[in-house]
Image (cartoon, rainbow, N blue to C red; front, side, top):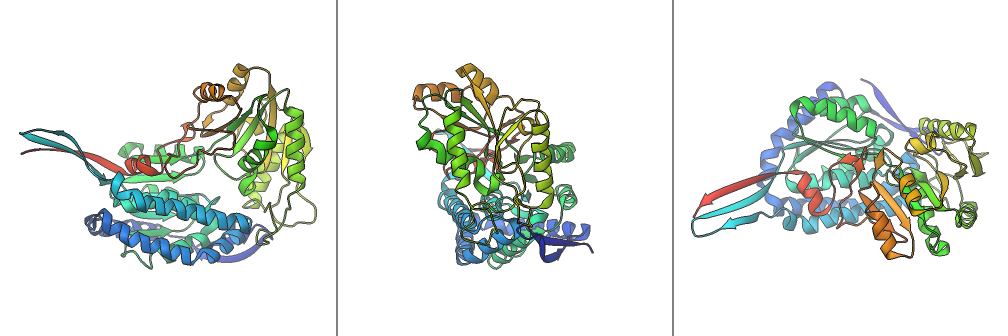
Length: 456
């Protein structure tokens, strides 16, 4: 039986190892989920919520333990890991608070002779697969609404965060009935085997390339999928933007979690009259931050999740520099640190043939281009195969609305506002996915619609 080694990216030292799930294990987990689905469904929404509130409380009790493990195994600075935990728990509790309302049946026609009613019913067994970048919040986003809706789950976390996954399994299964939540462990080959089991829905967060493979794998079964995939979000800074006001938002939107975020601001498109002010402000903000061990409470920038991620980032930046990009700050691995670290980096003189423009950049690197007209800004913003998030910085509300509607993006925010909210769907255009999470939109996508027309 093969082993999966968990590595601390701050030190490149092994933490622990787990046994990878075998094909027999994966099949058994799917079988257990099927065995549990009838009783879980018949418990009803209120009954499931009652149990899942106990799960939420158990997680809250383990906040410090989980955040410490997240910092150690994934490399998220401990202060960000604590915030990530609170963020995920807020979403879980919002699902619990609104689940009955959003899953309630709707009467579409009623008269003296007949009544037509639309119900949301669970699919059955769902395969949920998530990446490593937000180990707790990703579990909440993929599994929370599925469980409330009445689906049983077979879950796989990334091989980079297996210990976080193991802790999730421990906490959830200390409350829920046997077979409702099942977990498998391993790399992409385990995920591939999972989606080929007898499941009724696949929910996946990760790269667009893997999302395409999943769609292809389930196409012959016409299996529904909810895919939240990659992004290369543009941030447009117009000439009337208040840079002092929005600089912190721009910085966080690019560099939070060391830039390893699907809807991070990954391409900055700046009016030519603002570029000097913007680059000076961002450079100063970078200089104020501390790079170091993720477990240190003073650390602002931890490592990337793994050496393989560092190597990819180095290749992307080297490609840009070889084609004429200028490094304003950063652009290399910091001296004196042995882990998978990379300095926060600003790049200018960007052309659209560079990998940092064409590809999703999952690390602390921000390419910057300029524009002169609104039309040019929109054209550059849409010059990507992705369409997850977008950011517009302007004091002109009419311009914001006009531009927002022309961006090929599922979510757009203005200035210091955020589209991330428990009441909003998380969604993308183009290669950024298909499916919705959160609020009524998420409950819609993890349930089947049934119309029942009956005589009165």
